[in-house]
Length: 421
Ligand SMILES: *Cc1c(COP(=O)(O)O)cnc(C)c1O
Image (cartoon, rainbow, N blue to C red; front, side, top):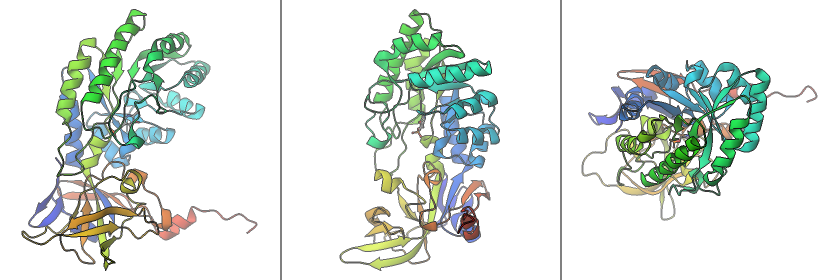
């Protein structure tokens, strides 16, 4: 459920007509809804009522300061995967005890940064990383709470580029070796082993892989406790999918996911952390784009938009589907026709949809890509020297630009020409 609905024939973001935003900032742009972000966070937070928990938003999905601030004020934690994200989380007001640091390749500098600034826990993914963190923490005279990310070897049944819980993936340590690894990590100075971490992938549309993975984590909790480890916190990762295609069967709801979590891991008595990213931000955002041309081709027609793969790379990278709807609501009974919907970049990969049924649209009209709030703006680039597009946050009848479009001069000024030229 989101807050982008037609009202009086015009798509609105909460109470703001989308064309009003376009008139103020120009297309293309991203718009996010505060009400949807809030609603999604609360579905998880309230869904886990009854067990001690912290919902740690995976900020790589959308790391704008304003989006972070909304979640910070709701009492969320945050999952960060780089020193840059850690700095962004701090800047948005998250205290260290609400920041979890994940990722397969943390550097010495990043470790030092989070140990100095404070961190709730660091999720470790390999033995070399444990040894390095131990060395860094001991040299600073501190002890840091850690978990080990285990790879449960379950098939998340999602796109291969976002599956992370099979043994051939680069993530975590094989669960079969966990006891040996925990024995080693517990003996290292500067590290306090508090729990277990698992994250099996993204855009999962079935609860069974989660359930399988969490059951393995529960068994491991019992084994590790029997061996003297004080396992008191389980980080269950993120990954719950969202409905990208309205016409498809909907994935499980956060409330169902939370019920399953409580049923499976509740009996351990552990504090639970979850790290949803896509489910919080995905349907809280749309990408609004203008139609430049409608071009008739050999046997197919093209809608050429002013947004491109540099603004939203998911279709090019994962072949993913986004519903694309006109901002002006199609009148009932109007005839739809198939279009290839493309951007202006000189690559055939710059195609958002092939043979998509669309109502009649004309140059100058606006269209909206639904479910673009996660892994949209954060994955964008300035390829073709196309400026990063503005991001706008809506709250009821107000809107604010939360990242302006840079000017060409600002973009060019980032390059530095050596003195010898
Ligand atoms: C990407 C990631 C998440 C969030 O995944 P979503 O599919 O966006 O919920 C959570 N935890 C870790 C460790 C991740 O890498």
